[in-house]
Image 1 (cartoon, rainbow, N blue to C red):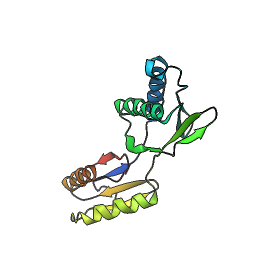
Image 2: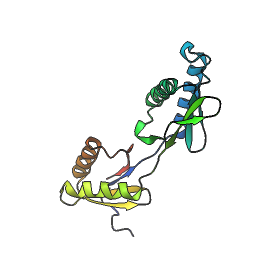
Image 3: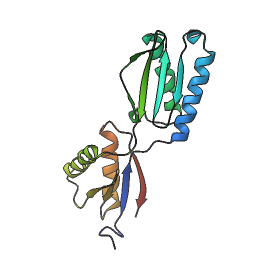
Image 4: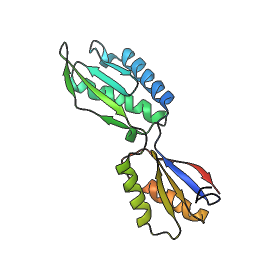
Length: 168
C-alpha cells in the first residue's frame, strides 16, 4: 500500500508523440521537395530512431529548412522544447548538415529543479517525488494541485511538460 493512495495526485511527464514527429518530418520533406526556393539545393530532412537530420547546400537554406520543420512540428502540437539542435557541420560535397535530437523524459537534474520549484511555492500539504523519468505530485486538496499545475505552466524549465493521471 503506497503512502499516497487515495490522496489527490497528478504526474508531471515530458513525452513526445513520435507519430506526430514522423508526420511533421514527412510534411516538411514534402514541402521542401516542391518549393522553388529549395530547388537544386540538395535540401533534405529525415527522421531516424532518435534524431532528425537536416541537410542543404548552405547555412541559409539549412535555416529555412529548420523553419519549415518547426512550423510542421508546432502545427502537430509537438513542443519545440523537446527538440535540441546540434552544431551545424560541414558534410560531403559542399553541403552542411545539422542533427536535431528529440528529448523525452525528465532527467534527474530537471527533476531536482522541478521538486525544488514545487517546494518553494510553499503550498501547505503539497508533496512531489521523482519516479523514474517523471514526477508525482500529491496533496489533500485538489485546488492546491491545480495551483501547482498553473505555476509549472508559467515557469520555463526548458522542457515540454505534460500533466496527466489527475486523480481525486
